Length: 313
Image (cartoon, rainbow, N blue to C red; front, side):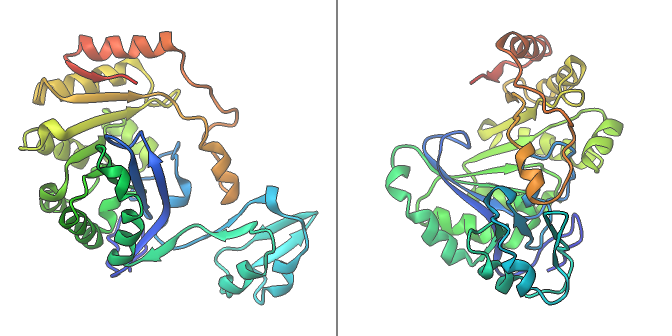
């Protein structure tokens, strides 16, 4: 596995940081959502910071810690220290992290992900198959699923062999050949179009958006165009401007007037995850959800710029 940002992970096993059951917001029906680890983007507002790095990391949940110092006494390379009444981690220390985590009696220390073979993941997914007969299925999310492309394709193919409806949530920052290979095994595609202006996109996500826009154009001119839903998450001061929504809407409608487009309200719940990884969130004071009136103003802009199939929840 090559763990540098944006490079493909070629390990035979899949790195998964969460399996969410009984989800109703990641596709049609009741779904099992599998979150792949690793992402080539670095969105300042990332909702899943534990999914950014390809490699497994240690999470520290201070609210569970009883300061028994078992972790400090177990470590050998100063990976865990107790300073000024706080547990401090050096996640790059060459420690036996499995042993340190096992020593924690309250699970305040945990790994952020697990490794699965495709067959093991299928077994996990099939635990919920009784719900799939009512229109549900499996959704592959992340991170960025296409960062583990070979395993992704194998898992999607295995799901189709089991008759399981498949969906994906992707940034589309991926070489188009992988999308072409995945399409026959996908029943539904959720793709982000976060920021239309290329300069702002690079400033706020760390990457240029030309590849993303090209892939959106490819999907919206493919045979699967009616199974594609383009999403824009509303992030205060960044994506949540009428100019940005108008530009995205005009771009999408110029390719395919019947494009399904969804504008997602700001999610204030992500901030709490950043403390587990000793990371800083982009907002010092966490904004609130947008009111129905503000959301309606964004919907109106999208419609005025040609969107005919606006998804409103």
